[in-house]
Image (cartoon, rainbow, N blue to C red; front, side):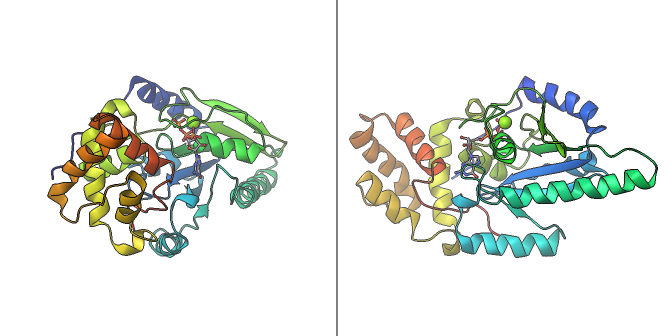
Length: 288
Ligand SMILES: Nc1nc2c(ncn2[C@@H]2O[C@H](COP(=O)(O)OP(=O)(O)OP(=O)(O)O)[C@@H](O)[C@H]2O)c(=O)[nH]1
Ligand SMILES: [Mg+2]
Protein backbone atom coordinates (compact mmCIF):
# COMPACT_ATOMS: atom_id res chain seq x y z
CA UNK A 1 0.00 0.00 0.00
CA UNK A 2 1.27 3.50 -0.81
CA UNK A 3 1.88 6.06 1.93
CA UNK A 4 -0.92 8.66 2.16
CA UNK A 5 0.02 12.26 1.36
CA UNK A 6 0.92 14.25 4.46
CA UNK A 7 1.92 17.89 4.45
CA UNK A 8 1.55 20.37 7.26
CA UNK A 9 3.15 23.67 8.04
CA UNK A 10 0.71 25.98 9.81
CA UNK A 11 1.33 29.71 10.05
CA UNK A 12 2.03 29.71 13.76
CA UNK A 13 5.09 27.50 13.27
CA UNK A 14 6.61 29.84 10.69
CA UNK A 15 6.04 32.75 13.06
CA UNK A 16 7.40 30.86 16.05
CA UNK A 17 10.56 29.99 14.14
CA UNK A 18 11.17 33.68 13.50
CA UNK A 19 10.78 34.46 17.22
CA UNK A 20 12.91 31.45 18.04
CA UNK A 21 15.82 32.82 16.03
CA UNK A 22 15.65 36.00 18.08
CA UNK A 23 15.37 34.23 21.46
CA UNK A 24 18.09 31.71 20.67
CA UNK A 25 20.76 34.35 21.23
CA UNK A 26 19.71 34.51 24.89
CA UNK A 27 19.62 30.75 25.43
CA UNK A 28 22.46 28.78 27.08
CA UNK A 29 20.96 25.34 26.95
CA UNK A 30 18.74 23.50 24.48
CA UNK A 31 16.56 20.72 25.90
CA UNK A 32 15.68 18.79 22.77
CA UNK A 33 12.56 16.63 23.23
CA UNK A 34 11.83 13.59 21.07
CA UNK A 35 9.05 11.01 21.02
CA UNK A 36 10.24 7.58 22.27
CA UNK A 37 8.00 5.79 19.77
CA UNK A 38 9.74 7.55 16.87
CA UNK A 39 13.05 9.02 18.08
CA UNK A 40 14.46 9.33 14.55
CA UNK A 41 11.41 10.85 12.85
CA UNK A 42 11.25 13.46 15.64
CA UNK A 43 14.78 14.72 15.03
CA UNK A 44 14.73 18.12 13.34
CA UNK A 45 17.09 18.74 10.40
CA UNK A 46 17.87 22.31 11.58
CA UNK A 47 18.76 21.33 15.13
CA UNK A 48 22.54 21.71 14.78
CA UNK A 49 22.04 25.18 13.37
CA UNK A 50 19.94 26.14 16.40
CA UNK A 51 22.19 24.56 19.01
CA UNK A 52 25.54 25.82 17.66
CA UNK A 53 27.84 25.92 20.70
CA UNK A 54 25.11 25.79 23.33
CA UNK A 55 24.83 22.95 25.75
CA UNK A 56 22.48 20.22 24.47
CA UNK A 57 20.38 17.86 26.58
CA UNK A 58 18.52 15.16 24.66
CA UNK A 59 15.22 14.14 26.24
CA UNK A 60 13.41 11.09 24.92
CA UNK A 61 9.92 11.53 26.27
CA UNK A 62 6.93 9.17 26.39
CA UNK A 63 9.11 6.38 27.76
CA UNK A 64 5.96 4.77 29.15
CA UNK A 65 4.77 4.16 25.57
CA UNK A 66 7.53 1.74 24.58
CA UNK A 67 8.82 -1.46 26.16
CA UNK A 68 11.83 -1.42 28.55
CA UNK A 69 13.69 -3.55 25.96
CA UNK A 70 13.15 -0.95 23.24
CA UNK A 71 14.28 1.77 25.62
CA UNK A 72 17.47 -0.11 26.37
CA UNK A 73 18.18 -0.70 22.66
CA UNK A 74 17.72 2.99 21.85
CA UNK A 75 19.73 4.09 24.87
CA UNK A 76 22.74 2.10 23.68
CA UNK A 77 22.25 3.33 20.13
CA UNK A 78 22.15 7.01 21.13
CA UNK A 79 25.18 6.76 23.41
CA UNK A 80 27.13 5.06 20.66
CA UNK A 81 25.94 6.97 17.57
CA UNK A 82 25.45 10.49 18.91
CA UNK A 83 27.70 10.41 22.01
CA UNK A 84 24.77 11.94 23.88
CA UNK A 85 23.30 10.56 27.04
CA UNK A 86 19.53 10.42 26.54
CA UNK A 87 17.37 11.61 29.44
CA UNK A 88 14.40 9.25 29.44
CA UNK A 89 11.24 10.91 30.69
CA UNK A 90 7.56 10.36 31.10
CA UNK A 91 6.37 13.93 31.43
CA UNK A 92 2.86 12.75 32.18
CA UNK A 93 3.71 10.90 35.39
CA UNK A 94 6.99 12.69 36.06
CA UNK A 95 9.36 9.73 35.75
CA UNK A 96 12.90 10.86 34.92
CA UNK A 97 12.21 14.59 35.22
CA UNK A 98 14.12 15.04 38.49
CA UNK A 99 17.28 13.68 36.88
CA UNK A 100 16.77 16.01 33.94
CA UNK A 101 16.36 18.96 36.27
CA UNK A 102 19.63 18.09 38.00
CA UNK A 103 21.40 17.90 34.64
CA UNK A 104 20.06 21.33 33.68
CA UNK A 105 21.13 22.83 37.00
CA UNK A 106 24.57 21.29 36.62
CA UNK A 107 24.88 22.86 33.17
CA UNK A 108 23.92 26.16 34.79
CA UNK A 109 26.58 25.96 37.46
CA UNK A 110 29.23 25.20 34.83
CA UNK A 111 28.05 28.24 32.90
CA UNK A 112 28.31 30.40 36.00
CA UNK A 113 31.79 29.16 36.82
CA UNK A 114 32.85 30.30 33.35
CA UNK A 115 31.11 33.64 33.85
CA UNK A 116 32.77 34.22 37.21
CA UNK A 117 36.19 33.41 35.79
CA UNK A 118 35.57 36.21 33.33
CA UNK A 119 34.52 38.56 36.12
CA UNK A 120 30.81 38.37 35.33
CA UNK A 121 28.02 37.91 37.85
CA UNK A 122 26.28 34.52 38.04
CA UNK A 123 22.74 34.30 36.68
CA UNK A 124 19.99 31.74 36.04
CA UNK A 125 20.66 29.33 33.17
CA UNK A 126 18.32 29.92 30.24
CA UNK A 127 17.00 26.72 28.73
CA UNK A 128 14.82 26.28 25.66
CA UNK A 129 12.65 23.19 25.14
CA UNK A 130 12.69 22.37 21.46
CA UNK A 131 11.00 19.61 19.51
CA UNK A 132 8.21 18.52 17.19
CA UNK A 133 4.58 19.37 18.07
CA UNK A 134 2.91 17.28 20.77
CA UNK A 135 6.03 15.43 21.94
CA UNK A 136 5.41 16.72 25.48
CA UNK A 137 7.54 19.87 25.79
CA UNK A 138 4.98 21.82 27.82
CA UNK A 139 4.15 18.81 30.00
CA UNK A 140 7.87 18.51 30.70
CA UNK A 141 8.12 22.17 31.72
CA UNK A 142 5.17 21.73 34.08
CA UNK A 143 6.90 18.72 35.61
CA UNK A 144 10.20 20.56 35.98
CA UNK A 145 8.51 23.52 37.63
CA UNK A 146 6.29 21.25 39.73
CA UNK A 147 3.01 22.93 38.76
CA UNK A 148 0.88 23.61 35.72
CA UNK A 149 2.38 26.83 34.41
CA UNK A 150 1.87 26.30 30.66
CA UNK A 151 -0.94 24.74 28.62
CA UNK A 152 -0.44 21.10 27.67
CA UNK A 153 -3.04 18.98 25.89
CA UNK A 154 -3.59 15.96 23.73
CA UNK A 155 -3.27 17.55 20.28
CA UNK A 156 -0.55 19.10 18.15
CA UNK A 157 -0.20 22.88 18.13
CA UNK A 158 -1.23 23.67 21.72
CA UNK A 159 1.62 26.09 22.47
CA UNK A 160 1.23 29.02 20.09
CA UNK A 161 3.90 31.47 21.21
CA UNK A 162 7.18 31.49 23.10
CA UNK A 163 6.95 31.90 26.81
CA UNK A 164 9.58 32.18 29.57
CA UNK A 165 8.93 30.44 32.88
CA UNK A 166 11.11 30.94 35.96
CA UNK A 167 12.13 27.99 38.13
CA UNK A 168 13.64 29.27 41.37
CA UNK A 169 16.84 31.27 41.07
CA UNK A 170 18.65 28.73 38.96
CA UNK A 171 16.66 28.10 35.82
CA UNK A 172 14.67 30.06 33.26
CA UNK A 173 12.75 27.82 30.89
CA UNK A 174 11.47 28.85 27.48
CA UNK A 175 8.43 26.95 26.22
CA UNK A 176 8.16 27.08 22.44
CA UNK A 177 5.61 25.84 19.91
CA UNK A 178 6.50 22.55 18.27
CA UNK A 179 8.63 22.97 15.17
CA UNK A 180 8.43 20.98 11.96
CA UNK A 181 10.68 20.90 8.92
CA UNK A 182 9.14 23.20 6.27
CA UNK A 183 8.65 20.17 4.04
CA UNK A 184 8.10 16.59 5.05
CA UNK A 185 10.15 15.01 2.28
CA UNK A 186 10.30 11.59 3.84
CA UNK A 187 6.70 10.40 3.63
CA UNK A 188 7.37 7.28 5.69
CA UNK A 189 8.57 9.47 8.55
CA UNK A 190 5.62 11.81 7.96
CA UNK A 191 3.25 8.86 8.36
CA UNK A 192 4.81 7.95 11.71
CA UNK A 193 4.50 11.57 12.84
CA UNK A 194 0.83 11.55 11.85
CA UNK A 195 0.16 8.25 13.60
CA UNK A 196 1.82 9.49 16.81
CA UNK A 197 -0.18 12.74 16.59
CA UNK A 198 3.02 14.77 16.28
CA UNK A 199 1.61 16.80 13.38
CA UNK A 200 -1.82 18.38 13.18
CA UNK A 201 -4.77 16.35 12.00
CA UNK A 202 -5.52 18.89 9.25
CA UNK A 203 -2.51 17.52 7.38
CA UNK A 204 -3.94 14.20 6.31
CA UNK A 205 -6.90 11.94 5.69
CA UNK A 206 -7.53 10.01 8.92
CA UNK A 207 -8.82 6.85 7.27
CA UNK A 208 -5.83 6.50 4.93
CA UNK A 209 -3.45 7.11 7.82
CA UNK A 210 -5.21 4.53 10.02
CA UNK A 211 -4.99 1.94 7.23
CA UNK A 212 -1.34 2.74 6.64
CA UNK A 213 -0.81 2.41 10.41
CA UNK A 214 -2.34 -1.07 10.42
CA UNK A 215 -0.06 -2.07 7.55
CA UNK A 216 2.90 -0.57 9.36
CA UNK A 217 2.08 -2.66 12.46
CA UNK A 218 2.28 -5.84 10.38
CA UNK A 219 5.73 -4.90 9.12
CA UNK A 220 7.28 -4.18 12.54
CA UNK A 221 9.78 -6.61 14.03
CA UNK A 222 8.54 -8.61 17.02
CA UNK A 223 10.80 -6.81 19.46
CA UNK A 224 8.81 -3.60 18.81
CA UNK A 225 6.17 -4.66 21.32
CA UNK A 226 5.24 -7.17 23.97
CA UNK A 227 2.51 -9.48 22.71
CA UNK A 228 1.34 -9.04 19.13
CA UNK A 229 -0.71 -5.86 18.59
CA UNK A 230 -2.77 -7.80 16.03
CA UNK A 231 -4.03 -10.03 18.84
CA UNK A 232 -4.78 -6.96 20.94
CA UNK A 233 -6.66 -5.42 17.98
CA UNK A 234 -8.66 -8.60 17.37
CA UNK A 235 -9.65 -8.90 21.04
CA UNK A 236 -10.29 -5.25 21.60
CA UNK A 237 -12.64 -4.77 18.65
CA UNK A 238 -14.12 -8.28 18.67
CA UNK A 239 -13.11 -9.42 15.15
CA UNK A 240 -10.09 -11.61 14.39
CA UNK A 241 -7.36 -9.52 12.81
CA UNK A 242 -6.54 -10.79 9.28
CA UNK A 243 -3.23 -12.41 8.35
CA UNK A 244 -3.22 -10.95 4.84
CA UNK A 245 -2.61 -7.23 4.41
CA UNK A 246 -5.17 -6.94 1.59
CA UNK A 247 -7.86 -7.98 4.10
CA UNK A 248 -7.15 -5.11 6.50
CA UNK A 249 -9.53 -2.64 4.85
CA UNK A 250 -12.29 -5.25 5.02
CA UNK A 251 -11.52 -5.70 8.73
CA UNK A 252 -11.86 -1.96 9.30
CA UNK A 253 -15.27 -2.03 7.59
CA UNK A 254 -16.28 -5.00 9.75
CA UNK A 255 -15.30 -3.41 13.09
CA UNK A 256 -16.82 -0.08 12.00
CA UNK A 257 -20.14 -1.93 11.55
CA UNK A 258 -20.00 -3.01 15.21
CA UNK A 259 -18.51 0.07 16.86
CA UNK A 260 -19.27 3.19 14.84
CA UNK A 261 -22.53 2.38 12.98
CA UNK A 262 -20.57 1.57 9.85
CA UNK A 263 -18.72 4.89 9.82
CA UNK A 264 -15.18 3.86 8.82
CA UNK A 265 -13.75 7.37 9.25
CA UNK A 266 -14.88 7.44 12.88
CA UNK A 267 -13.59 3.91 13.40
CA UNK A 268 -10.23 4.95 11.91
CA UNK A 269 -10.13 7.86 14.33
CA UNK A 270 -10.89 5.56 17.26
CA UNK A 271 -8.10 3.19 16.26
CA UNK A 272 -5.55 5.98 16.12
CA UNK A 273 -6.82 7.45 19.40
CA UNK A 274 -6.50 4.07 21.09
CA UNK A 275 -2.91 3.73 19.89
CA UNK A 276 -2.15 7.28 21.08
CA UNK A 277 -3.59 6.51 24.52
CA UNK A 278 -1.40 3.36 24.69
CA UNK A 279 -4.55 1.21 24.78
CA UNK A 280 -3.01 -1.12 22.18
CA UNK A 281 0.01 -1.65 24.45
CA UNK A 282 3.56 -0.31 24.23
CA UNK A 283 4.56 -0.11 20.56
CA UNK A 284 7.78 1.26 19.04
CA UNK A 285 7.25 2.43 15.48
CA UNK A 286 11.02 2.76 15.10
CA UNK A 287 13.86 0.68 16.47
CA UNK A 288 17.61 1.12 16.01
N1 LIG B 1 1.73 8.90 28.06
C1 LIG B 1 2.42 10.05 28.03
N2 LIG B 1 1.80 11.19 27.70
C2 LIG B 1 2.53 12.33 27.69
C3 LIG B 1 3.90 12.36 28.01
N3 LIG B 1 4.34 13.64 27.90
C4 LIG B 1 3.28 14.36 27.53
N4 LIG B 1 2.18 13.59 27.41
C5 LIG B 1 0.84 14.05 27.00
O1 LIG B 1 0.93 14.41 25.64
C6 LIG B 1 0.07 15.52 25.35
C7 LIG B 1 0.87 16.60 24.66
O2 LIG B 1 1.71 17.24 25.58
P1 LIG B 1 2.16 18.77 25.43
O3 LIG B 1 2.98 19.07 26.62
O4 LIG B 1 1.01 19.66 25.14
O5 LIG B 1 3.09 18.69 24.12
P2 LIG B 1 3.91 19.87 23.43
O6 LIG B 1 5.17 19.26 22.91
O7 LIG B 1 4.04 21.02 24.33
O8 LIG B 1 2.95 20.20 22.20
P3 LIG B 1 2.83 21.58 21.33
O9 LIG B 1 2.76 22.72 22.27
O10 LIG B 1 1.58 21.37 20.57
O11 LIG B 1 4.03 21.60 20.45
C8 LIG B 1 -0.55 15.91 26.69
O12 LIG B 1 -1.83 15.34 26.74
C9 LIG B 1 0.38 15.29 27.71
O13 LIG B 1 -0.28 14.94 28.91
C10 LIG B 1 4.54 11.12 28.36
O14 LIG B 1 5.74 11.04 28.64
N5 LIG B 1 3.74 10.01 28.35
MG1 LIG C 1 3.44 22.93 24.15
